[in-house]
Amino acid sequence: MKKAKYEWSNEYVRSLRLQQGLTQHQVAKEIGISTRAYINFEQGRSQFRKSTQENIEAYFKNRLTHETKMEVIIDYLRIRIPLHDLNIVFNEILKINRKAFVSDEVKRYGYVGRYSIDLIQVYQSVPNDNRGILIEFSGQGCRQFETFLKQQQRSWFSFLKDCYAFQANVTRIDIAVNDYKEALPLKRLLHKMERKEYKSKFKTCSYHWGTQRNEITDKLQAAGLSLYFGSMQSEFYMCFYQKNYEIAKKKHLKVQEIPVKNRYELRFSSDKADQAVKQLIDVEDPVNICDLVFGYISEYVTFLQPVKGKARKNWNIYPAWSLFLGDVSTLKFVTDPKELSFERTKTWLQNQVMPTLKAFKIIDDTLQTEEIESMLAETNLGDRHKKMIQSVINPNYSITE
Image 1 (tube, rainbow, N blue to C red):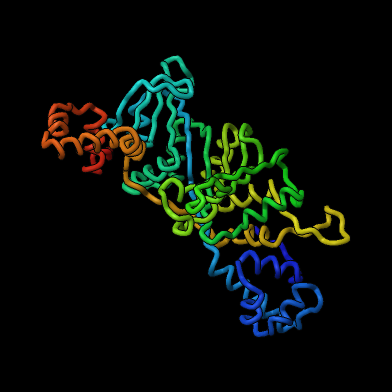
Image 2 (cartoon, rainbow, N blue to C red):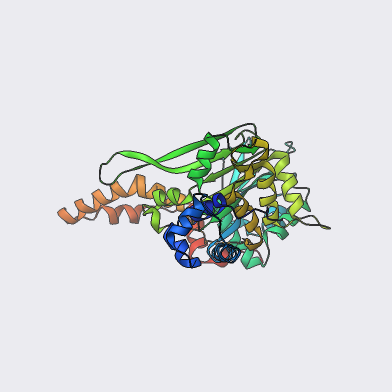
């Protein structure tokens, strides 16, 4: 993908400076001119000499090369396998030992039974249901499955090819870009959306502010911006949001402590999901996943920079948007394997059980009784809990021979 060309105008340079969070004095000092001369340039009162212009181009290009850091991940996946033989799914597709999964009668998406190992889910249909078997990985489920892929010495793409060998159909895939340096200033994009300074193939674009409680005033305040491009009911839409706020709230940390700043998610479903995956695993001409992501983004949305005296159709592309799209060459598709953690169970335990358990512990300590020890001694472990123990303490328990 080629980066759009721009004249290094005063508006363009100002946009770059603001995007990088720099002061006028900092930029002037780095390129070797006075702050007053730089301010006059930004305000359109003077132009740089050729040598100064070359210095400022080199300065910003160097910063973008070394400061921008983005990674692409698969963050949700749902695959339908049109057969009913669970052994094929476990042994030849997932390649995870069936005995590691817990079965139950959870009904979802119209399926009648479920096999699960933490956040890796397999749903079964009745014999005459031509939908067959459904495999589902949530965001953390993807990270957990990457642990198995690593042990199996397989990639996501070889796994997907194994699925399609059995006429699979991907019904949903979310591909996300994790941005560690805030390449896109989402608040500025929101202002542009409100002023109609963008063009899009989507019919609808919207936004949502999250909330957080102010530690000083104890009042709720806006925090964590999400921008939506397209309808959530459509087969393809995008969501750009401040991931650091989401993680900070979930883990009770400060926003500044979270390394990832923004996340840009492309959410495909139904035919669009299947088409996207087939592009990635095409035998003759596979599409690089980073190129796929930025190709879709650039095709569906473009943010604009107004130009005085020119009609909207003649406006330039917003510089930060151009740099964002042009940075695809530095992107990497990564995996981040995570061991099985049973976070949902721990969250339930923390919220529902631990307060009562702590109360009994205080009673035991105060009255010198052993109620908790007695209850533990009388408790029998079920199949789910036994398999949870095995999966955590013996990672090889889940691996097929």
